Length: 193
Image 1 (spheres, rainbow, N blue to C red):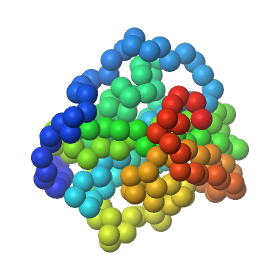
Image 2 (cartoon, rainbow, N blue to C red; image 1 turned 120 degrees about the vertical axis):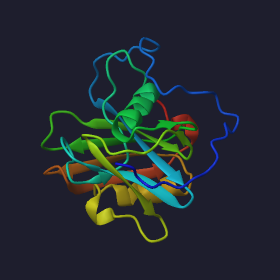
Image 3 (cartoon, one colour; image 1 turned 30 degrees about the horizontal axis):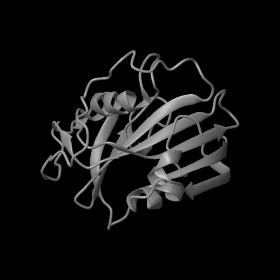
């Protein structure tokens, strides 16, 4: 199905060209704990593109697009691949905005999630087996009641073009028991929290 999307130009903005295909072998990602994840959120013309998770971890929640980093894949390449697989588009101007560590009392591994922003992309947004994309008007309000509870903590920094790091502790997967989210310099946006 075709999803209506805001139109805008896809100029390069002086950033290095990024392909839409994962580059394997550039920086091996050895088996690590916590599990390394990506989350890419497209924001354009006062709208944010979220996808309703149709299966797997987080089913029913509205979220950005992302998933786990595969062996032999860079974190950046994983973010690009996941966006392509889950929404059918390729980010043109992806930048890292944050690194968050999610600790669950009912999961075997914490999740170190690298959060990315994009405003320009190639392709047409489409529904996939995993996600149902929808544009949300930021001024009319984000659907926080249908999102992960931590999103209310860090989305304000994300939407204000800030960079951030933090840790969120959950019980029973979705109840926050403790958190620390803070603005951080871009130099803090590296592998490992």
